[in-house]
Amino acid sequence: MIRELLKTDKRLAGMVEVRKALLLESPSVHAITSSLALLEVIEWYAESAIKNLAAGAAGAKAIQRMGKKDVGHLLGRILEDRHDEAEGEPPDRRGGSTGLEILTAETFIGPGFAQAHGLAGVVVADVVGFNFSERDAWDVSQILAYLQMGMADIVHLLLARHLGCKWVASFDSDFERCRKHIHDGFGLELLSTPEEILAVFRA
Image 1 (cartoon, helix red, strand yellow):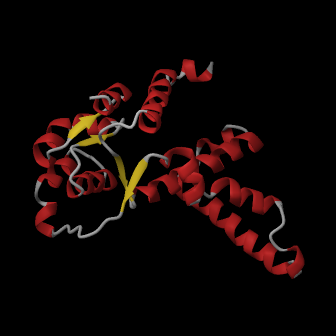
Image 2 (cartoon, helix red, strand yellow; image 1 turned 30 degrees about the vertical axis):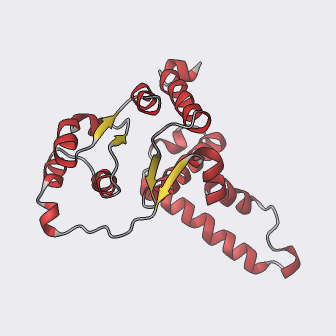
């Protein structure tokens, strides 16, 4: 009901179909992400997990004012306290299921978990031979920065071009706003809905 009220059902259902097509239909194109994008996944997962845990334990008001720095500080405390706790335990008891161990496990994402929960069927490309000079910054990237697209998003586009991709998929409104510049400057077609992604998979 909450998903329906927040109008997320349509996109979620669409992405379920995308996942099915990717894993079961053997599309003729590959879904590719970069090794750098994994850092964003790790960051997002940790923030999302700790906020969900905090909301469940202390209520929604406890997380309303939590910014990224607050989240980082809280996660840092968990790691420090976990280390201190482990140092104080006898060797035969270390690694037990203490509250801090559980918190760490709930907020960390490892390669096995990532593969099982979304990366299956996605090629994670190593970044090899990628260069970005001062001249490149004043090229098409300048327009995207001017239009307030963030550096990480611009890097994703640069990597997609470097890897020889034809399409880039994103639901971010920054990408939609810059659709023409992404096409003209990077030679990339934007896929901004699950339906557009499916159409490419099933072409």
